[in-house]
Amino acid sequence: MRTLFCFLTRSYKADGGWKQSAFLSPHSMQRRVRCRRSDVCKEERSYYITTPIFYVNASPHLGHLYSAILADCMHRYKLLRGFKSRFATGTDEHGLKIQQAANAAGEAPLTFCTGVSQRFRQLFGSCNVSFTDYIRTTEERHRRSVEHFWCTLYDKGFIYKGNYEGWYSMPDESFLTPAQVADAVDASGQAIKVSLESGHKVEWLKEENYMFRLSAFRTPLLDWLHKNPGAIQPERFLQDVLQWLQDDLPDLSVSRQRSRLQWGIPVPGDSEHTIYVWLDALVNYLTVVGYPDNHNHWWSVARHIVGKDILKFHAIYWPSFLLGVGLPPPQSIHVHSHWTVNGTKMSKSLGNVVDPFERSQAFTTDGLRYFLLRQGVPDSDCDYADHKVTNVLNTELADSLGGLLNRCTAPALNLTQTYPPFCPLFFPIERDGRAVPEDYHLLGTVRNLPTLVERHYESLHVYKALEAIASCVRQTNGFVQRHTPWKLNRMDSGDQRWLDTIIHVTLECLRIYGTLLQPVVPRVADKLLSRLGVRADERKWSDLDFLPSYSGKDCRFQGRTLGPDTGVLFNRLENPTGDEQKTKKIKKQAIISRQFT
Image 1 (cartoon, rainbow, N blue to C red):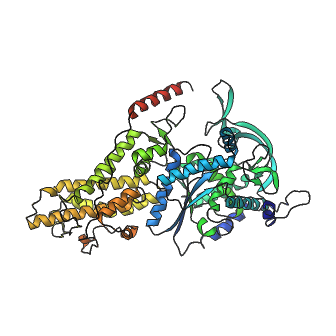
Image 2 (cartoon, one colour):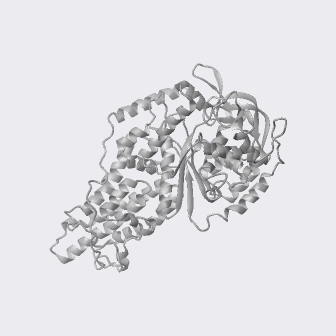
């Protein structure tokens, strides 16, 4: 089947080798690419977001979940905006590390991969990650895509057979130049070489491999980045890539000898070689959207979310591969930094690896989602501690947002359990009613909030969007506290209308906050909006028309009965037992560890 597949793309020589076609310039490929993208997706707003596919040599950790939740947030946001959106994630299951891990576990590689991949699916399911596509690189559809991709690169002259001699990091599955390695000493005192980027041990490798003409793509990559300044975000990571491109790019080994690596996709037509795991893995983004047959529509709107440790593979190798086969690079690559624990890198030896399954149960699914997106800053490492999670969730979800909802829907204040009427006499545009200047400032801030949140969501600065929402929630609590509606005399018609107006304004603010929070905390947002009586078809981005009664327009919610009371919006949390003592112990261990390294 494999050989027949490649017969479709090139001819086979009698001596058993592949007939190589003439070398095509990557500049000519790039010119063809530019002409193609503008013709796709003109009539329909489409969006395609991906996480990296996660390596199955170990169980999922907090960083994996953060990538998935960030992509999920963008997917949900685009759906609210009326886009047709696809969201892909999955697992990377080939390579020497997997082969060795499966052997250590006493399992067949596919059995081992299936078990770990299932844990990723379970984690994403439990954390409400709403992917539309889950890809495994061991799937038949992916093998077909990789073989076609390889054959296309070969036919265009970008892959040739040569000899590779240099440094190789097995943990990173990465080939390194001499400038990327340094001297070090291992735990037994032996002198070793390590990767400057990851710190992992490297070995000298010399073998006959297939090589990719990466050297031909330095100028096309610079041209792409200069013409698309938003292609890599945030800016600091774009600068890293531009710095890498200051030097010539060496050709890249894209195969391993089959005698060393059996667990992978064989090179088409050459059973003695296995395709390099990163070339194999990166093609997953195309497999999901139907490559090589029906991919153009979705590929033209592709965006990747990746961790900073795999930036070079996505910003140098992947765009070069794509230009080589005549496809455009992704529209953007959004890069995020890593999560530390109490200021130190997660490590099994320190006992500080955060189990996302346990934390999602302890803090609830939406609680963990909120914390990661609230505290995750893309361009700098983020620190995790249980007490930080508790403080953020108690302050912003339980007390501030939950308390506000409880105040204005409690029967003691909202006797009729309705969306009460707004009275323009007490909150007039002319500012001569009972409202004070701070109240008008609140209206302006909330009215502008959707635009501000949209800007932050689009740039994947979700933490800034959540800070803006949290600030408005605090201002709304201040509005209620300032006017103490519980002290108003219901027997006085003026006081009753002012009370109704205060509640109406507060409910409108809450409706805006609940709608904007749906991509981040879908269950909490659903509970809030349901309590307000907002139907499922009234929760789109286009429904963010704040306080129409203030401008003399009809408010569809006015007079509507509130939804059922299903309890507090978000329960206050207690710090897990022993958190502070464990934190001190881990910090002490980290200090000791640094003294001896």
